[in-house]
Image (cartoon, protein in one colour):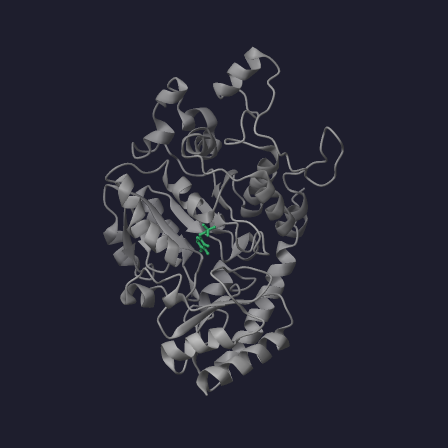
Length: 426
Ligand SMILES: *Cc1c(COP(=O)(O)O)cnc(C)c1O
């Protein structure tokens, strides 16, 4: 029987603890696991048997979270790691090599733009940034060294929704995976795998945990990509010297990417999620559907109010009929366009800074997806490393603030914005 999302967000991956009957998933606060005997240990190290060896690789609390997120996303497997940025490196690591590139959307989280345009060059990788609304440009940018297309489902912070099916079709035709960052939508609002994504990455720091307590990340594998169809992905299809010539795709089938991420990625990159963080995130996911419904409801109410306000120039929420991306909601995220948008304030940069300082309920922080409402002036903070051209492309121009609408009382949020707009534009 196929359970609904609300049931799976509480139960998927978890059973009562076999040792104690504990109903809630225990925090297995341990580094290592005792082997039954020397033969058992050898089989685990050879990947001939699946089990727990050392918590850099696997931990029972983290394993429950991995299975829960994989289930909610409709994936074959998932691997958790220490942050969303770690998840992005973990997603690219098995696909890439020196000289290889990815096609990346111009509308990405500011930190991701920096990671892709600067830091990955140290590995000999590169990113070609393309406007994903221009399908011809995406196709034209792909070359023999391209190993993935990377985009966000609902892009942070510009109120942009990607046509995921169009991107998946281009990736399919090129024989490369589509990687979708689904952080701001969550699997409750959008399932990129249904639209043809091969890999889904998350910053679990945000809505999945939902209360701003721990950082974490996750890579979900659809299990549907044929890694052996070409010689582009030798980490998956060719013999792995560190495991006596084992071929991951041949041996593990639709779990090849997940096994590689644990047995090679976590083993050697060490970007491990700790069991405490997994616990907080599991607690968060239990109420994901309830929170996301309220986030969307509040965001819609607040965005509609702001849009009519004479002190406001523009509101970029895809949930507003005035948004050019409103038409994509019913395909990509039918339950709502998330709770993150930008507001252009009359009075430009200076008014934005005053607004941020005058708000009382909204916290001025570099985070999103918290139960509490948050505000940030992206151009002077998260998107500071970007050129003004990149800021505008990412929806973070100097005259806009980004709001992450929480699950408080919507009237209270409106009253707070009202008094702050008065202070900002006086
Ligand atoms: C926050 C965020 C990230 C990075 O995640 P961290 O957990 O902060 O490393 C990546 N993508 C998006 C869309 C984000 O919002």
